[in-house]
Each structure stands twice: as C-alpha cells, then as structure tokens.
Length: 270
Image 1: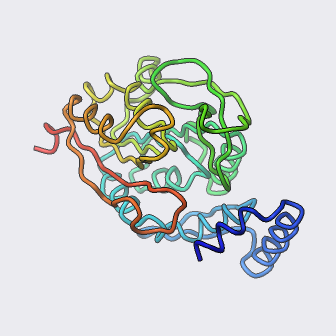
Image 2: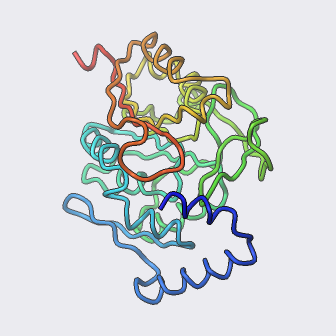
C-alpha cells in the first residue's frame, strides 16, 4: 500500500485531478455532503470540500485515538481551550460542543482551512468560538507558509519549497497579555514549529499551567534547527513532565514520523 502511495505522488496532475474529482463525486453521491461525527453523548457535523477533509472527518475518532482520548479526558476541567493548528475544526468542535461550553480559541494560518472551520462552526450553530487567521510562534511578525500535502500547511523554510502565502505570527503570551482568557488546555499541531510555539508561551506556562497536548514531528523539527530533545528540555525547564501517548510510526498510516505527547505542570500533576 505504501508503495502505491509513493507511486501515486509521481502521477502527473492531468491524470490525478480528474480522478480526484470523480472520487469526490462518488463520495458525495453515496455519503452526502456532510459527515456526522459521533462524540460522547453528542455529535457534530462537518461539511467537506475535498476527499482529504471527508476522510479526516469520517476517521476522526479512530485516526489518532490516544490523542483524542487524552483531549477528551482533559476537556471537562478546561474553562478555555487553545487549538493551535485548527485544520478544519475537528478539535475545536469537540471542545465547543462540550456540555460545560468552554471558551475556544482557534489559530489557523491557512485561509482555506480557516474558511472550512468557519463553515463547520456555522453548520453546528457555534457562534462564540474565537477564530484567528495567523500562525503562532516565538515572536510577533509575519511568516511564509507552504502546502505540504492534502490540506496540510506548514511554515516555509529553506528545506520546503514554493511558499504559498504570508500570514501574521502571534505569541500565546502576547494574546493573553492583550486580554484573551488564558488557556487551561492547549492542543498543538504545527508541522515542526512546536518549539517556537512553546517559546512564545513561556509566561503562560509559568503563570497558568495549562495542560499541553502536542503532536511532535521529529523530521519536521529539524527543518527549523530544533529537535525533540530541545522540546523536552524546554518543557522540563518550564516545570512540566511529559507522557508519551503514541510513539513514532505507530497507529495511523502516515508519511512522516509524528509522535503524541501530553505535558502537565509537575505541581499540578502532584
């Protein structure tokens, strides 16, 4: 199967585009244009624009079960949730539809993904979620983005070609200093920019001790001169201990070696 995927990436666009259109047409014919995602005692709806979004919504509960289960375990204690790297809003909707209705802030640099999040929030009648069209990092400024595959985007570096857009960069510490409610739960999925996000929330970690759920990309971290060890050292210095939820290469099929980690402030864990 992996060999077929590699072969497919080398098929020219004139062949792939009509195939994708036909596949999406069949999906809409048999599955409709909206996916219903079941949750614990509730459900939410996701409208998809392409097959990648359809598959993400359909497989949400089983794609990364350890990560989602950890998110759901921490959610009832969270008054405010930051979703950094919102994709099409699956985790934002999980939080926003929770019975205790926490404050939810979503940070998404890709304009197409942001439009998908807004569309899905409207579809579910969620009008109070804070949406920010920006990247999150270690300092304010702007950054170029590049599209990796499917609906995935990442910060462009010398190792990633063809930047597609330029977006503002904010820090979590800056957002909180401006008056946004500080988070109790932070989900980070930023394709290798993890350490930069953490460096920009140093004060928030110290003062508010949020639980941090993070998808770590060892290969992508190196693009920015960072590493897993640097992330672990930073969190240890911040007074956090980590627990591995999924090791690289386990669970869902993927083209890269991401791992899932949950970090808690040691004082809180004690």
